[in-house]
Structure formats: structure tokens, C-alpha cells
Length: 380
Image 1 (cartoon, rainbow, N blue to C red):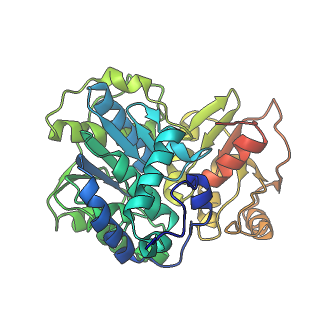
Image 2: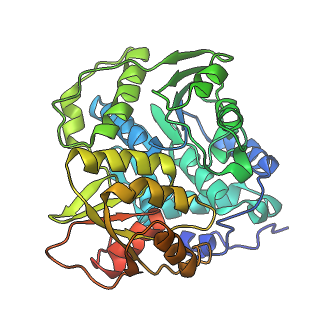
Image 3: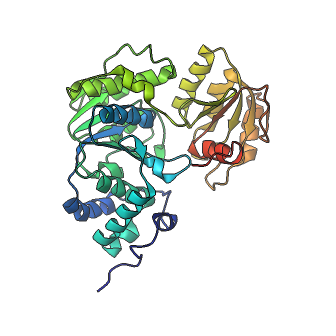
């Protein structure tokens, strides 16, 4: 009896287009059932789980790049992507190929029963793709999504957990206080965790209930190409490498490409995928240190604290330019206009780039993607 509704020859893009990308509640049972089928076909590498509110993507890439440079077979799974899905799965220095993705998709379709395939969300299914592709490698750098004990990435036992900065975000899933959010996130740890420098003391209080150590501080000052806040994430990575008793070669980091992380894509344009108050604080300090003010190309998802973000960024803002984004989760433009007026910020709808102005494109992966595709005509 054929238990499949989706042909194993259906393209991954077509399949994912039918999947739930956003949801109101998390059902961890589905991914657990799926992994029970898949684990028979996967020999997991050493799993390094990256959990936190901000800095997961850059931390994961720094670490995966160094592991790869040391000669270890390494897969880095992150989310979301900016331009192309392949960005989510980085294998030995490159984004995964379309062919490898399609092959993994077809294999998953053969392994998983129909009732499981139907229930899996977009993120759960893509997590399973990454787990399958990591089989027999040396290291899997696994970045949590929302990040918590019921995150899809927590379906496998992690050997080491790296905790980036934790702040308020995704409260509807994780809790309304720093202590609640930290507790939910840190419960995902199965063995030792290394905790990066935190803004909130409550994170350390929660961590003290687990087997944890604090990240050390290293001299990375010669890596001048990175914004100051990324050096914090480097400290976490170096602490992990030391914990793993692996050689450390700081020069390896010079080659790391961090797409969308305070990235200058033109002489007067910086893009950053940050979208919450914690990200706003670090980007504010970066521009204050450079004594620069900007035209902020901005939009926000409705569940984000956009008023606090705009309030924090106000000292560096000359004007706010609201970029239109085709996403039903985006906050109503009138609300952003009202907030800008309340904060005495000049505001209008974004239309084009002017050569004499300095621009910061900020607000989410969706905002950066929209800007790159429609304004800069980027393709990938």
C-alpha cells in the first residue's frame, strides 16, 4: 500500500511551498516521531547546539568555518535565509547545492510515513533535511530556531550548547520575563553549556542550575573587519574551541563571510538582519562609535517591539524610510508612521537611494531580502 501523497520526485521548493512557515503553537511530538524513523538512517556527528536571542547565526558560522579550516567535515544549519533557501545549510565552506537538497528531500519522502510528512512544519522538515545531510560528518553546528526545549533542533541530543545573548523576544512562545525565556532556552542543554556575556544577570542565575561555564575573553582586536559586537560572539566560539581541545588559528576568521550582519554592501549602504531591541542596541553603538547618522530603511513584523527599536535607534536616525514588504505579518504602515511622529522622527515611504545619504537597512531578514531583491537587484 502506498502511504505517500507527495511524490518523492516533487521538488523541495514545491513541497515547502505547501508547508506551514509560521504557527501559533509548538507541537514537539511530531518532530520526535519523525526522528524515530529517521535516526535509523543517520549517524550523527558531534552536535554543537547554538541557543539564544541574538548572535546565533554569526556564532555558528564563525565556529563552522574554523572547524572546516581545521579539516573537519562540518555542517552548519541556520535560519532563516535572506535570498535563497540553500543559505540555511552550509557544508564544508559552501551553501548546500540544489542537487544535494533534492536528493535529501527524496530520501526523507521515502523514509517518513505519510501522516508524519503531512504534520511536519516548514522548519521541522528542513531541520530533518539538515540532520540527514550531516550523517557521518565530524561536526554538526545546529542553530536553534525560536530556541528552547521544544525547538525542532532539540530533537537530537546535543554534546555541547553555546548560549548567545538572551533578551526579550518571541514572548508568546518562550515566556514574558528574562528568567522565563532563559529557563526555556537553557532547558535545551543536554550536557555542558558555555554562556556568552549577558546583558541580564538573570541568565547566569538560571545557568547556575545547569552544568555551565562562562565564555572567556580573547584578544581579537586585529580582526578589524568585524563590528565590535561580533567580537563577543568570537569569544564564545574561541571558548568552545578551547573546550574541545582544538587548535585555534585566529587568522582563519579573516576569511569568514557574514551575510547581512552589519554588512556594508555599498559605500553608503549597510544591511543588518537584526529585528529586536537587543539588535538595535548593538547596531546603535556601532554607528555611535563611528560618529555616523543614517537614513533608516525600516519595517517590522507586527509581533516585534518596533517602538522600542525605533526609540533606541533615534540618536542615529536622520529619517525613517518605511519599505513596503509583501508579508501578512508586517505591521500596518500607519502604526509605524504614528510612532515615528510620536518620537519626532521624520518619516516617509522609501522610494530610492540617494548617493549623498548614508543608509542602514534594518528590521528583519524579510526587510533585508526585500531591499536586496527590489532595490539592489541581488540574485543568488
